[in-house]
Image (cartoon, rainbow, N blue to C red; front, top):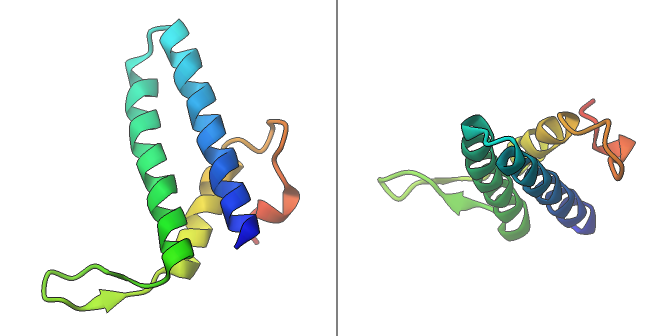
Length: 92
């Protein structure tokens, strides 16, 4: 779980960095990307931290830990050239 938390924290730092740079260049696209990607990262981290989450309106639930891990790793690849990226995060 520590590795997941480390990946989530690192990804959120990269998104924050992009947001700061976006403000400097007045990029609307950066704002939208930051908001949505941050939400995805936090939700995936929650799925991995807390286990199965109910998703269906009928009360049925599903567990997506493998999908959440893949999503986080795929998002991290976007920042693979930045300091702090760990090769074991790279999707297989």
